[in-house]
Length: 395
Image (cartoon, rainbow, N blue to C red; front, side, top):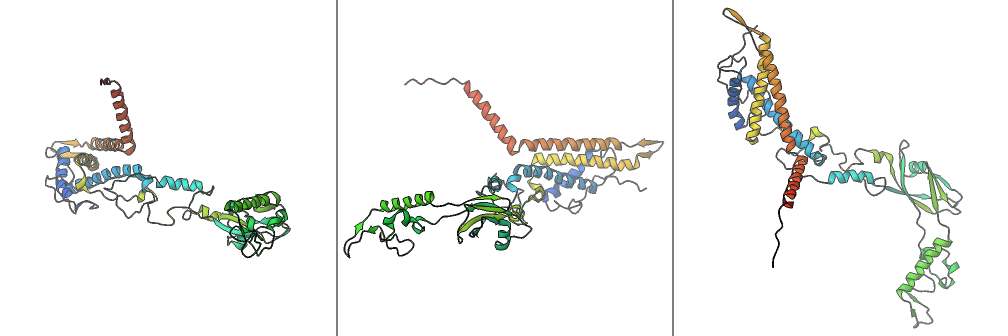
């Protein structure tokens, strides 16, 4: 078995000596690397005791500590802002960006709930016309959709509305039966026969006309429409399964019922029924949140202190693993049992404690905790103001 390497107190440059090189180009990281290596070695007993690791081992722990600090920091930001981050481009970098909450994700969620009611959603309702046939009361809407609307045979039809618009009063039929005074000589739809155009009527010569006010025309139209509604047959429907039943029994053909519908495949599509469509370059989960490696130079003093302590904890565990390989060291006249178990347990305990402390500190800075803190400050201030006497104004 090879003899262990002993730390010599002269660490080399950290740039190019870390496993991943995430921060090697950062000047502050380069400057702090050797200092952190000596700090960790002295925490482990150097130079009083031999430390059986070299600067490469400590540099690996240092890089890992910076990455873990960034992980804890950015995971909190992702949790805090995820509702605002979802659907954002992954090409942006949010490390130093202030993310303000916005309501669009909530609006998008409410839109999908409004889809069945026809007041929201992201799938446009289609429209089509069903021609009624004389003496046919039942119509297969599945066959209608497949044969005339291009629906796939394996798809399903979701009908939103069934509409029948009766002809307007002026274009309708039968008003002459109820209003002979309006029936006169008609030149076609829209001509009230004998009434002329523009409210003129009662012609009795080339130079004699009677002008009626506009409200008279409006009243006549309303009267005709009410007459058609009450006296003429109106259609209703009953939709059971794929069968549309028209009531009353159609006696003539050539009339059309408008159908507002959508295909179930469109309503269930993850791309069509979505405000983001099929765009693949958007944040769809926490792993796609655009946070990259942290810039070491921008970490403040409390953060760097945490990193140094976590590096020392990682180094303690690593030294314990190295010493556990040898377990006993031979010295003149006796054997010495190495304290590898203590180093491992102490290093792991320090890591756990440091992580918990960092998480609690970051959690206290979350948006929810800050709002709760602000509310507590406001309540305390109001309680204090209640006990302050109100001065009496004497004019």
